[in-house]
Image 1 (cartoon, rainbow, N blue to C red):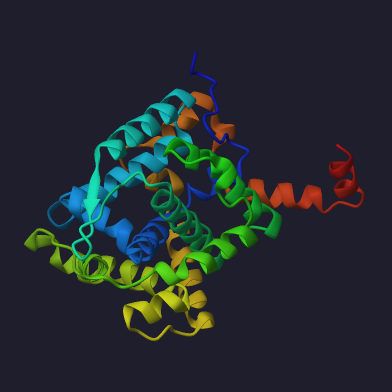
Image 2 (image 1 turned 180 degrees about the horizontal axis):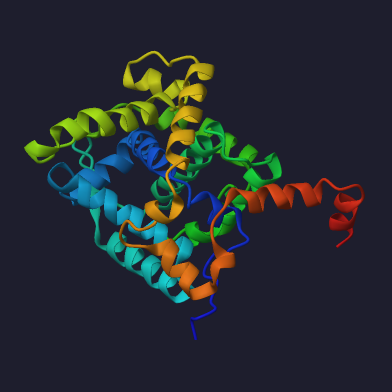
Length: 299
């Protein structure tokens, strides 16, 4: 029975609230920029997909996967994960310099993709004004060990806090580089192919999204791409402005876009399951009450 199944995370999770925010689109593009800096990982994508010809399709499939594992039933999330694992098991990539062949499902590569994605979601959301305490940020990282399991990782080896995530990036940084494949991704994200009638929209809307996502990358990523990182305060101000504009669009209007994961979840679980940052504010306020922290520890 799935009518009241809360799914992998559930309506009270941090993930449920964050993933309903429109700044996730900016965060998703940032993740692509960051993920492309691992030469072995991006090579696996470029050698096993038609990214250059169907990048929009790939972006939408990724968004669909995130929506399914966040707001779908447990069964739907497990099926989506099984499908990803099955595909990855069949894919290989070859290093043109050494001739080495390796599996796309190499745990180190899966971990990089996972961490770059989760870090991007968390960084963009927090810096754009989405209300999260430090404890809630840690909780978000910990929750996503569940999604890591779905793609084939052992949750015990996946960062569970923001500090562990930062330590992971420190460890992996020597392996990163702006390879030719990464520059291809960069070129696509700046000027994705569109129908001639959509060129003005690309210039007006998409360029702003891609630029903001790129600017929000960590300084070492800018260095690898050969650019100078803009001032953090300047980027944060732009992120907050974009967040205010996008969050001003009525949620019901935004959620009408296909494939409608959030509306389907609300129909399944009731209106109380609506994603909203106010749930996180309420949770934080409860925990801040005198004596509540000690009670939580005792429990």
